[in-house]
Amino acid sequence: MRPIFFIPFLFLTACSVQATPQAAPPTATAIPFATATLVPTFTPRPSLTAAIPTIAPTIAPISASLTAQVNVRVSPDKNATSLGLLDYGSLVQVIGKDASGDWWQIIYPQNSATTGWVAVAYVPVPEADVARLPVVMPSSNQSAQSPAASALETPTIAARTATVKAQIFVRAGPAQAFDSLGTVNAGTIVTPIGRNETNVWVQIQFEGGVDGKGWVAAAYLENADLQGLPYFDNQGKLVYAATPAANPGQPTLTATAFSAAIADGDSEKAPAVRLKFAPDAAREFTFSSELSAPSGDSTDWVAFTPYEPTNQSTFVFFKLECSGNGGITATLEKDGLPVPDLKPMVCGNYDLGMKVLGGQEYILVLNADGSGGPLRYVRYNLYIKSER
Image 1 (cartoon, helix red, strand yellow):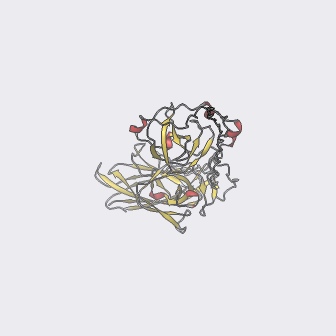
Image 2 (tube, rainbow, N blue to C red):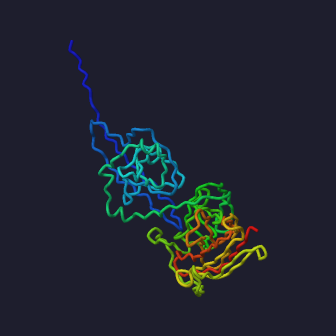
Protein backbone atom coordinates (compact mmCIF):
# COMPACT_ATOMS: atom_id res chain seq x y z
CA MET A 1 0.00 0.00 0.00
CA ARG A 2 1.29 3.43 -0.90
CA PRO A 3 1.72 5.80 2.06
CA ILE A 4 -0.47 8.83 2.07
CA PHE A 5 1.26 12.09 2.82
CA PHE A 6 -0.58 15.16 4.18
CA ILE A 7 1.06 18.30 3.06
CA PRO A 8 0.19 21.25 5.32
CA PHE A 9 -0.41 24.52 3.60
CA LEU A 10 0.31 27.79 5.23
CA PHE A 11 -2.04 30.49 4.19
CA LEU A 12 -0.80 33.98 4.71
CA THR A 13 -3.24 36.76 5.06
CA ALA A 14 -2.63 40.45 5.28
CA CYS A 15 -5.02 42.61 7.23
CA SER A 16 -5.38 46.15 6.16
CA VAL A 17 -6.39 48.27 9.11
CA GLN A 18 -8.08 51.42 7.98
CA ALA A 19 -8.76 53.99 10.72
CA THR A 20 -11.96 55.88 10.22
CA PRO A 21 -11.33 59.58 10.79
CA GLN A 22 -13.49 61.00 13.53
CA ALA A 23 -15.87 63.74 12.59
CA ALA A 24 -14.58 67.16 13.53
CA PRO A 25 -16.39 68.58 16.58
CA PRO A 26 -18.85 71.42 15.86
CA THR A 27 -17.05 74.71 15.48
CA ALA A 28 -18.06 77.07 18.30
CA THR A 29 -18.84 80.63 17.25
CA ALA A 30 -16.76 82.17 20.02
CA ILE A 31 -13.88 79.81 20.52
CA PRO A 32 -13.03 77.37 17.67
CA PHE A 33 -10.77 74.48 18.45
CA ALA A 34 -8.55 72.36 16.24
CA THR A 35 -10.28 69.75 14.09
CA ALA A 36 -9.09 66.20 14.41
CA THR A 37 -6.46 65.10 11.90
CA LEU A 38 -5.49 61.42 12.00
CA VAL A 39 -2.07 60.06 11.19
CA PRO A 40 -2.05 58.48 7.67
CA THR A 41 -2.76 54.73 7.77
CA PHE A 42 -0.75 52.10 5.96
CA THR A 43 -1.18 48.52 4.79
CA PRO A 44 1.45 46.17 6.31
CA ARG A 45 3.15 43.55 4.19
CA PRO A 46 2.42 39.87 4.87
CA SER A 47 4.68 38.53 7.59
CA LEU A 48 5.08 35.34 9.59
CA THR A 49 6.11 37.43 12.63
CA ALA A 50 3.37 38.44 15.02
CA ALA A 51 2.74 42.19 15.04
CA ILE A 52 3.97 44.15 18.04
CA PRO A 53 0.94 45.35 20.01
CA THR A 54 0.42 49.12 20.15
CA ILE A 55 -0.14 49.10 23.92
CA ALA A 56 1.85 47.09 26.40
CA PRO A 57 1.22 48.83 29.72
CA THR A 58 3.33 47.63 32.61
CA ILE A 59 0.79 48.86 35.17
CA ALA A 60 -2.97 49.03 35.34
CA PRO A 61 -4.26 52.18 33.60
CA ILE A 62 -4.85 55.14 35.93
CA SER A 63 -8.20 56.89 35.53
CA ALA A 64 -8.24 60.72 35.51
CA SER A 65 -10.71 63.46 34.52
CA LEU A 66 -9.78 66.36 32.22
CA THR A 67 -9.87 69.87 33.70
CA ALA A 68 -10.14 71.50 30.25
CA GLN A 69 -10.93 70.69 26.65
CA VAL A 70 -7.67 69.35 25.20
CA ASN A 71 -6.11 68.01 22.03
CA VAL A 72 -4.90 64.41 21.98
CA ARG A 73 -1.67 64.41 20.01
CA VAL A 74 0.27 61.75 18.17
CA SER A 75 3.43 62.49 20.19
CA PRO A 76 4.38 64.48 23.32
CA ASP A 77 4.76 67.78 21.47
CA LYS A 78 2.32 70.71 21.33
CA ASN A 79 3.09 71.05 17.60
CA ALA A 80 2.41 67.37 16.85
CA THR A 81 -0.61 66.29 14.83
CA SER A 82 -3.89 66.27 16.74
CA LEU A 83 -5.73 62.95 16.78
CA GLY A 84 -8.88 64.54 18.14
CA LEU A 85 -10.39 66.65 20.89
CA LEU A 86 -11.55 65.53 24.35
CA ASP A 87 -14.10 67.60 26.26
CA TYR A 88 -13.76 69.03 29.77
CA GLY A 89 -14.56 66.35 32.36
CA SER A 90 -13.83 63.41 30.02
CA LEU A 91 -12.39 60.31 31.72
CA VAL A 92 -9.06 59.07 30.32
CA GLN A 93 -6.84 56.07 31.05
CA VAL A 94 -3.21 57.10 31.68
CA ILE A 95 -0.63 54.40 31.00
CA GLY A 96 2.69 56.27 30.73
CA LYS A 97 4.60 59.54 30.70
CA ASP A 98 7.29 61.13 28.56
CA ALA A 99 10.86 61.71 29.78
CA SER A 100 10.19 65.38 30.57
CA GLY A 101 7.16 64.60 32.71
CA ASP A 102 5.07 67.16 30.77
CA TRP A 103 2.91 64.67 28.87
CA TRP A 104 0.77 61.63 29.72
CA GLN A 105 0.32 58.73 27.34
CA ILE A 106 -3.33 57.66 27.32
CA ILE A 107 -5.45 54.98 25.67
CA TYR A 108 -7.14 56.75 22.77
CA PRO A 109 -9.86 56.24 21.73
CA GLN A 110 -11.27 54.66 24.88
CA ASN A 111 -11.28 50.85 24.90
CA SER A 112 -9.06 50.70 21.83
CA ALA A 113 -5.59 49.32 21.13
CA THR A 114 -4.05 52.68 20.25
CA THR A 115 -2.60 55.58 22.23
CA GLY A 116 -2.24 59.35 22.22
CA TRP A 117 -0.62 62.08 24.31
CA VAL A 118 -2.17 64.86 26.43
CA ALA A 119 -0.56 67.68 28.41
CA VAL A 120 -0.02 66.94 32.12
CA ALA A 121 -1.38 70.36 33.10
CA TYR A 122 -4.94 69.35 32.21
CA VAL A 123 -4.96 65.78 33.59
CA PRO A 124 -4.47 65.58 37.38
CA VAL A 125 -2.91 62.28 38.48
CA PRO A 126 -2.22 61.51 42.17
CA GLU A 127 1.45 61.85 43.09
CA ALA A 128 1.53 58.26 44.34
CA ASP A 129 0.51 57.04 40.87
CA VAL A 130 2.87 59.35 38.96
CA ALA A 131 5.91 57.50 40.31
CA ARG A 132 4.47 54.18 39.09
CA LEU A 133 3.96 55.34 35.52
CA PRO A 134 6.64 54.08 33.11
CA VAL A 135 8.58 56.48 30.90
CA VAL A 136 7.56 55.88 27.29
CA MET A 137 9.75 56.90 24.36
CA PRO A 138 7.61 57.91 21.33
CA SER A 139 8.37 56.08 18.11
CA SER A 140 10.00 58.01 15.29
CA ASN A 141 6.90 57.84 13.08
CA GLN A 142 4.85 59.45 15.85
CA SER A 143 7.25 62.38 16.20
CA ALA A 144 7.20 63.26 12.52
CA GLN A 145 4.74 65.86 11.26
CA SER A 146 4.42 67.35 7.85
CA PRO A 147 4.37 71.13 7.36
CA ALA A 148 0.91 70.80 5.81
CA ALA A 149 -0.45 69.07 8.90
CA SER A 150 1.13 71.71 11.11
CA ALA A 151 -0.51 74.48 9.13
CA LEU A 152 -3.93 72.97 9.84
CA GLU A 153 -3.43 73.15 13.58
CA THR A 154 -5.25 75.84 15.57
CA PRO A 155 -3.68 76.73 18.93
CA THR A 156 -5.65 75.62 21.97
CA ILE A 157 -6.69 78.41 24.34
CA ALA A 158 -4.93 78.11 27.68
CA ALA A 159 -7.29 76.75 30.30
CA ARG A 160 -8.23 78.70 33.42
CA THR A 161 -10.49 77.69 36.28
CA ALA A 162 -12.72 79.23 38.95
CA THR A 163 -14.54 77.89 42.00
CA VAL A 164 -18.30 78.23 42.47
CA LYS A 165 -19.02 79.89 45.86
CA ALA A 166 -22.71 78.91 46.13
CA GLN A 167 -25.17 76.84 44.13
CA ILE A 168 -26.04 78.81 41.00
CA PHE A 169 -28.15 78.50 37.86
CA VAL A 170 -26.42 78.03 34.54
CA ARG A 171 -28.28 79.95 31.84
CA ALA A 172 -28.37 79.85 28.05
CA GLY A 173 -27.25 83.50 27.80
CA PRO A 174 -25.71 86.34 29.81
CA ALA A 175 -28.85 87.45 31.70
CA GLN A 176 -31.47 86.10 34.10
CA ALA A 177 -34.03 86.32 31.31
CA PHE A 178 -32.40 83.36 29.51
CA ASP A 179 -33.58 79.81 30.17
CA SER A 180 -31.94 77.80 32.94
CA LEU A 181 -29.82 74.88 31.70
CA GLY A 182 -29.32 73.43 35.17
CA THR A 183 -27.37 74.22 38.34
CA VAL A 184 -23.78 74.00 39.53
CA ASN A 185 -23.10 73.18 43.19
CA ALA A 186 -20.87 75.12 45.58
CA GLY A 187 -17.25 74.02 45.41
CA THR A 188 -17.46 72.93 41.75
CA ILE A 189 -14.46 73.83 39.59
CA VAL A 190 -15.56 75.43 36.31
CA THR A 191 -13.69 76.68 33.25
CA PRO A 192 -14.42 80.30 32.19
CA ILE A 193 -14.22 80.76 28.43
CA GLY A 194 -15.94 84.12 27.86
CA ARG A 195 -17.65 87.10 29.50
CA ASN A 196 -20.22 89.76 28.72
CA GLU A 197 -19.14 93.35 28.16
CA THR A 198 -19.42 94.44 31.79
CA ASN A 199 -17.93 91.24 33.28
CA VAL A 200 -21.19 90.60 35.18
CA TRP A 201 -21.77 87.25 33.43
CA VAL A 202 -19.18 84.59 32.62
CA GLN A 203 -19.43 81.90 29.97
CA ILE A 204 -18.26 78.49 31.19
CA GLN A 205 -17.90 75.00 29.79
CA PHE A 206 -21.13 73.19 30.67
CA GLU A 207 -22.10 69.83 29.20
CA GLY A 208 -25.83 70.55 29.41
CA GLY A 209 -25.60 73.67 27.26
CA VAL A 210 -25.60 74.29 23.52
CA ASP A 211 -22.14 73.41 22.18
CA GLY A 212 -21.15 72.52 25.75
CA LYS A 213 -21.39 76.11 27.08
CA GLY A 214 -23.48 78.08 29.57
CA TRP A 215 -23.52 81.38 31.50
CA VAL A 216 -23.22 82.08 35.25
CA ALA A 217 -23.12 85.26 37.35
CA ALA A 218 -19.53 86.42 37.94
CA ALA A 219 -20.35 87.38 41.53
CA TYR A 220 -20.66 83.70 42.44
CA LEU A 221 -17.25 82.69 41.10
CA GLU A 222 -14.09 82.72 43.19
CA ASN A 223 -10.61 83.25 41.66
CA ALA A 224 -12.10 83.89 38.21
CA ASP A 225 -9.47 85.40 35.89
CA LEU A 226 -11.49 87.23 33.22
CA GLN A 227 -8.63 89.20 31.65
CA GLY A 228 -8.23 88.40 27.96
CA LEU A 229 -11.39 86.30 27.60
CA PRO A 230 -13.57 86.95 24.53
CA TYR A 231 -16.36 89.54 24.90
CA PHE A 232 -20.04 88.83 24.10
CA ASP A 233 -22.96 91.24 23.93
CA ASN A 234 -26.11 90.93 26.07
CA GLN A 235 -27.57 88.44 23.60
CA GLY A 236 -24.54 86.18 23.75
CA LYS A 237 -23.17 87.20 20.34
CA LEU A 238 -19.39 87.43 19.99
CA VAL A 239 -18.18 91.05 20.01
CA TYR A 240 -14.44 90.63 20.29
CA ALA A 241 -12.07 87.67 20.53
CA ALA A 242 -8.91 88.84 22.25
CA THR A 243 -6.50 86.30 20.75
CA PRO A 244 -6.83 86.13 16.94
CA ALA A 245 -4.45 83.15 16.61
CA ALA A 246 -6.71 81.02 18.77
CA ASN A 247 -9.93 82.56 17.45
CA PRO A 248 -9.71 82.77 13.64
CA GLY A 249 -13.37 83.84 13.48
CA GLN A 250 -12.70 87.18 15.18
CA PRO A 251 -15.16 89.77 13.87
CA THR A 252 -14.16 93.01 12.21
CA LEU A 253 -13.75 95.67 14.88
CA THR A 254 -15.83 98.84 14.66
CA ALA A 255 -15.61 102.07 16.60
CA THR A 256 -17.74 102.27 19.74
CA ALA A 257 -20.20 105.05 20.59
CA PHE A 258 -18.39 105.75 23.87
CA SER A 259 -15.73 108.38 24.60
CA ALA A 260 -12.63 108.00 26.75
CA ALA A 261 -13.06 108.86 30.44
CA ILE A 262 -11.60 112.24 31.42
CA ALA A 263 -8.65 112.06 33.83
CA ASP A 264 -9.57 113.26 37.33
CA GLY A 265 -6.02 113.60 38.66
CA ASP A 266 -6.29 111.12 41.54
CA SER A 267 -3.51 108.72 42.50
CA GLU A 268 -2.53 106.26 45.19
CA LYS A 269 -1.06 109.07 47.28
CA ALA A 270 -3.96 111.42 46.50
CA PRO A 271 -7.14 109.25 46.32
CA ALA A 272 -10.29 110.53 44.65
CA VAL A 273 -11.95 110.39 48.08
CA ARG A 274 -10.79 109.65 51.62
CA LEU A 275 -13.49 108.33 53.98
CA LYS A 276 -13.30 107.65 57.73
CA PHE A 277 -16.17 105.84 59.40
CA ALA A 278 -17.17 107.00 62.90
CA PRO A 279 -20.00 106.24 65.37
CA ASP A 280 -21.66 109.60 64.82
CA ALA A 281 -21.24 109.56 61.03
CA ALA A 282 -23.04 107.75 58.23
CA ARG A 283 -22.56 104.00 57.96
CA GLU A 284 -22.85 104.02 54.17
CA PHE A 285 -20.94 105.84 51.45
CA THR A 286 -21.56 106.17 47.70
CA PHE A 287 -19.05 107.19 45.06
CA SER A 288 -19.63 107.52 41.30
CA SER A 289 -17.11 107.99 38.53
CA GLU A 290 -16.10 106.75 35.09
CA LEU A 291 -13.16 104.79 33.68
CA SER A 292 -12.06 103.63 30.26
CA ALA A 293 -9.32 101.59 28.59
CA PRO A 294 -7.09 101.29 26.64
CA SER A 295 -7.29 105.12 26.52
CA GLY A 296 -8.61 107.67 28.99
CA ASP A 297 -8.64 107.54 32.80
CA SER A 298 -8.22 103.84 33.60
CA THR A 299 -7.78 103.81 37.41
CA ASP A 300 -9.48 105.30 40.48
CA TRP A 301 -8.35 105.16 44.12
CA VAL A 302 -10.84 105.27 47.02
CA ALA A 303 -9.45 105.37 50.59
CA PHE A 304 -11.41 104.46 53.71
CA THR A 305 -10.75 103.72 57.40
CA PRO A 306 -13.12 101.31 59.24
CA TYR A 307 -14.49 102.31 62.63
CA GLU A 308 -13.27 99.85 65.28
CA PRO A 309 -10.54 99.93 67.93
CA THR A 310 -7.18 99.79 66.21
CA ASN A 311 -6.32 96.34 64.86
CA GLN A 312 -9.67 94.85 65.88
CA SER A 313 -11.30 92.82 63.10
CA THR A 314 -14.48 94.01 61.45
CA PHE A 315 -16.25 93.74 58.09
CA VAL A 316 -16.90 96.25 55.34
CA PHE A 317 -19.42 95.51 52.58
CA PHE A 318 -19.20 96.63 48.96
CA LYS A 319 -21.55 96.88 45.99
CA LEU A 320 -20.42 97.80 42.48
CA GLU A 321 -22.88 98.71 39.72
CA CYS A 322 -21.70 99.37 36.17
CA SER A 323 -23.02 100.60 32.83
CA GLY A 324 -21.38 101.12 29.46
CA ASN A 325 -19.53 98.63 27.28
CA GLY A 326 -16.66 97.79 29.63
CA GLY A 327 -15.88 96.13 32.93
CA ILE A 328 -14.02 96.87 36.16
CA THR A 329 -11.83 94.77 38.40
CA ALA A 330 -11.01 96.01 41.90
CA THR A 331 -8.29 95.20 44.41
CA LEU A 332 -7.86 96.22 48.03
CA GLU A 333 -4.51 97.53 49.32
CA LYS A 334 -3.09 98.34 52.73
CA ASP A 335 0.25 100.10 53.14
CA GLY A 336 0.76 99.82 49.39
CA LEU A 337 0.41 96.01 49.33
CA PRO A 338 -2.53 93.85 48.17
CA VAL A 339 -4.64 92.44 50.99
CA PRO A 340 -4.11 88.64 51.02
CA ASP A 341 -6.97 86.18 50.49
CA LEU A 342 -9.15 88.90 49.03
CA LYS A 343 -12.31 87.86 47.21
CA PRO A 344 -12.44 89.14 43.62
CA MET A 345 -14.57 92.23 43.11
CA VAL A 346 -16.13 92.92 39.69
CA CYS A 347 -19.13 94.74 38.28
CA GLY A 348 -22.32 93.21 39.60
CA ASN A 349 -20.97 92.34 43.07
CA TYR A 350 -23.59 92.90 45.76
CA ASP A 351 -22.88 92.95 49.51
CA LEU A 352 -19.40 91.53 49.06
CA GLY A 353 -17.94 91.37 52.57
CA MET A 354 -14.25 91.92 53.26
CA LYS A 355 -12.54 91.40 56.61
CA VAL A 356 -10.46 94.43 57.65
CA LEU A 357 -8.78 95.90 60.74
CA GLY A 358 -10.23 98.89 62.57
CA GLY A 359 -8.26 102.13 62.62
CA GLN A 360 -6.24 101.14 59.54
CA GLU A 361 -6.57 102.92 56.19
CA TYR A 362 -7.32 100.81 53.13
CA ILE A 363 -7.34 101.84 49.48
CA LEU A 364 -9.71 100.31 46.96
CA VAL A 365 -8.10 100.37 43.51
CA LEU A 366 -10.58 100.24 40.60
CA ASN A 367 -9.18 99.41 37.17
CA ALA A 368 -10.91 99.50 33.80
CA ASP A 369 -10.61 96.18 31.99
CA GLY A 370 -8.89 97.09 28.72
CA SER A 371 -8.35 93.57 27.37
CA GLY A 372 -11.41 93.70 25.11
CA GLY A 373 -10.01 95.37 22.02
CA PRO A 374 -11.35 98.84 21.11
CA LEU A 375 -12.30 101.51 23.66
CA ARG A 376 -14.13 100.13 26.71
CA TYR A 377 -15.98 102.70 28.81
CA VAL A 378 -17.74 102.13 32.12
CA ARG A 379 -19.71 104.39 34.43
CA TYR A 380 -19.89 102.94 37.94
CA ASN A 381 -21.52 103.45 41.34
CA LEU A 382 -19.55 102.18 44.34
CA TYR A 383 -21.31 101.58 47.66
CA ILE A 384 -19.31 101.00 50.87
CA LYS A 385 -21.09 100.06 54.10
CA SER A 386 -19.55 99.65 57.55
CA GLU A 387 -20.55 96.69 59.72
CA ARG A 388 -21.61 99.10 62.47
